[in-house]
Image (tube, rainbow, N blue to C red; front, side, top):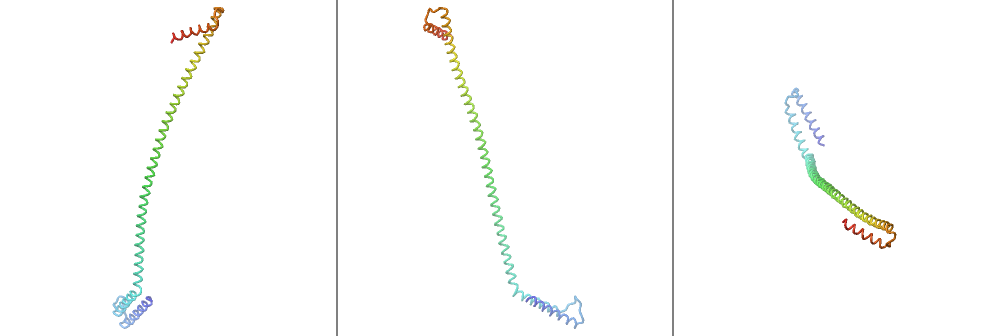
Length: 191
């Protein structure tokens, strides 16, 4: 509709311009023509009035709506940026806590390993000392057993020798007692 009004006003101004130019004997492209200027201004003013009534309000409403949408989008972008910043800070805190926890676990593991190593070394030392003590006791027991066997063997040997020498002057029990007493005297004298 606006296009029709504008086309009609332009056509009317053009027709009036040609009639005026024909009456005046032609005019140049840059020569002033008051009739053409009048109709051009009148057409422009009429176009402005029609545009104000018909199109100005929808254009302003569309611009305001766009401005509102842009403002909302900017607000949403600011909120998203702030939320992302908050999330980033929170993630950094979580990562820092996780790293601290990992360091703590590693330190505890190292400490536990060191304590376990010390305990194992100490247990090994105790076990080695126990084995050595048991071995010493066993050696001492075997030595005493061997000493006892050696004494018995010596007593028996002495008795046999004495029997042969005395040719049955004493009986066997008396000879063993005599030999045992003699060995006791010898062993108490050596110690």
